[in-house]
Length: 119
Image (cartoon, rainbow, N blue to C red; front, side, top):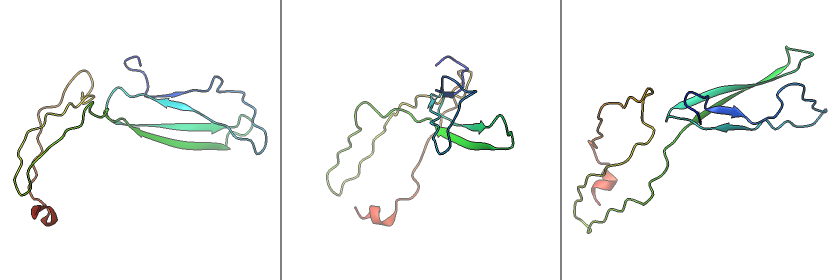
């Protein structure tokens, strides 16, 4: 995908002058390929040339997600013992645009649910 190109692309060879018989179907295929991990949206509008007031409007929303890790993260601990470890996870696609990367952030678990605390 070229930089700056839209995340959605319609896969129809022709987009005008398509004749649809009564009770027939139109498959309007499209692709989604995002440069960043954000929610993207588009609107697919199908209208009739003879009657512009008759149209079908379909909103499309998509969220890009990162690829899963190549290998699973395995954590082993003996029963009734505590495990403390630091995992460094790649956050591909986290750039904010223009190559900017957000500042450091952290997550901290403040409270363990009671059903897990007994384990």
